[in-house]
Image 1 (tube, rainbow, N blue to C red):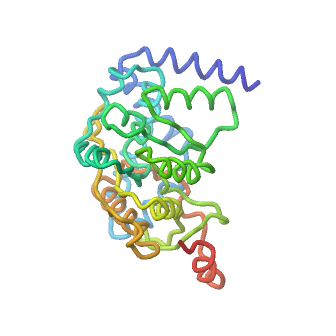
Image 2: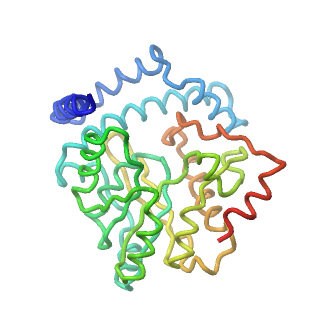
Length: 304
């Protein structure tokens, strides 16, 4: 059954990917109408997230952001299909890298780079980074239950030079590569809701008390390599720009949770600048803080 699902997935995406991107966007507009009005995909989640994140905005402003978000979400589906079956030259038309010199300067120094990102813009474009930077790009991913589809997507993400690593192995692999003196660019997208057992820290994010992962910070402090904030800004349909900003050069000199705060404040800034491009359909705030136990957990479970 899983094999059949893969063949259907592959055939449909292959046929759609043959279309010019402008026609895929026409399909995207149709899908937005269906997703928003007919299926009402996660409408309640999106509305609640936006309302809580922007308490000072009017209903009209929030509704406008919501409508733009669904357009962007459907564009993402179209662009991912486009990327799955595109070669390097065709795929690279989607994205430019604005300040690649910063990353490559660390390569010249023999240093690795830890990149903290988020589900902003089109995060699948991180797979294009080997076309622009000199480091070997390592990317963490969560394996899918359908193995044939998982293998196909994994190979698709690796075809431009990325090395994809299961999330549960990323810390061990990063430490091993660092000890062997292999410069790498480690891309981590960790702005989604952690499971209860993986909550490392509570902070305020987008005006809400928010549980977060601290894996990026823990890895950075272990290998003591520069940390950058990485985001992909949408300029217009079919055009993105990748950006990196230095957060800290020597992570071991930072205080506990300082890197995590740097990352979240930078992500919060770009979301506020263009809120429709963040993944509002994710149930980011499904966990509520247990006041009686959380302070003890935060202090004991995840001390760097």
